[in-house]
Length: 425
Image (cartoon, rainbow, N blue to C red; front, side):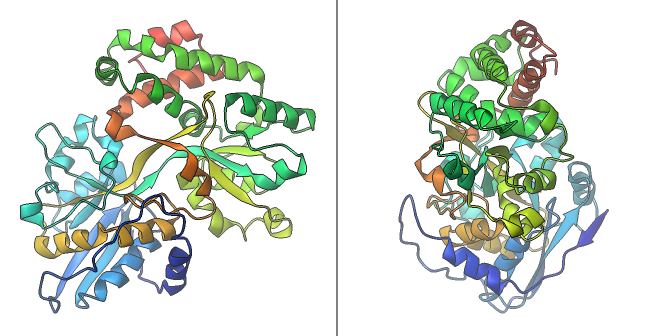
C-alpha cells in the first residue's frame, strides 16, 4: 500500500532555493528560529502524503535536525491516498502529520479525517504561530477550528514559449483582445494550435475559466451560497462564463484533436511543450514545477533550448488573474504519540524562510506573505491574485462549472442545457 522514501543529501537543491529568493512582493524581518523543547529529545515523526517524490520536505527535515539532531523524521508515500489515508489513520502505526486538501472540505466522507486533526488555530495549545502564512489561504471551519494549514500553493495558467513569440515578433498577450490577436497571428504563421492543453477537462477549464468565473461571483455571497449547495437554480450564475467558453471555442485557437493526443496531464504535457512548437500550453503550477527536471529528458529541448515562463491566461479585457489554492496542506494527528515535538516541527515549518525554501525546491508558489518567484513564475508578480478559500467557493462548485464548460467546448451541450444540469454532474 505504501513505500518509504529514503532521505537523500539535498545541498545542491538548497542552493537553488537561495538563488530564487529575489523579487519579493513584501519584505519582512523574521526572527531566527529558537527551539522551545529540549534539543536532545529523541523521537520519531512520520508524515504521510500522496507525493511520490517530496525532496523539498526532506530538505526541511535536514534543516530541522540542525536544531533537534535526535528527532528522526520520515515521509511515507501512500498509494491511492484518497482511500488509504483513512485506513492508515485507523491503524496502529499512525502518522503524526498527514496531507489534506481543500477539495476535502465539502465532501462529508472526509469529515472523520478532519475530525482526527488537531485545531491549529489554538496557538495556546500548539505553540504554532500562523502570521507568516498568507491568511487568504486559510479556511476556518464553522466552529472556528483550523484542521489544516497550507505548505505549498498552486495556480492554473499557461506555460509560454517566449522564444516563439520573439521569433514571430508577437507580444505576449496581457488581455483578451491581445490574446485573440496573438493567436490569430500564430495561426496565420502556420501554427495549428496556438494554445494547447491535455485531453482532460481539468487543465483546460481551470486555466481558462476559474479566474473568470470567480471574479463574476466573488462579491455575491448569496450566489456563492447557492452554488456551494448545488441548488439547481444556481446554474444561472454560470451563464456569462459559459457564453465566454462558447465564443472562445468558435475562434478555433485550441485544437481538441491535438489535445487528445496527450496521454496524461503531467509528463506528457511537459514533454510536448518541450518540442518547441507550442506557443502557449495551458497548465497548472504543479506541471510547471516538473519542467526543470525534464529539460534534460527532452531531446528537442536539449538540442534547441528556449526560454519559457508561467503566466495567467488573459481571458478578460482587463487582463488575466490567477486563482491560488493550496496545493498541499498539513494536518496534525491529534492522537500523535509525539504531539509536542510534532507541533514544534510545524512551528518551524510555518515560517517565511522555511515556506519559501520549500516552495523554491518544489518549484511551486509559496504560502508565505513574502512572495518569491523564480524566473518561470516571475510574470505572476504583476498579475491579480484571487484566493479560492478566501472567496469561499468550494470544490464541488468548480467541478460543476468545469464539467459544464468542457461539454460546451466539446459540443456535447448548449449553454442552456449546461445551466439546466447544474448540480447533476
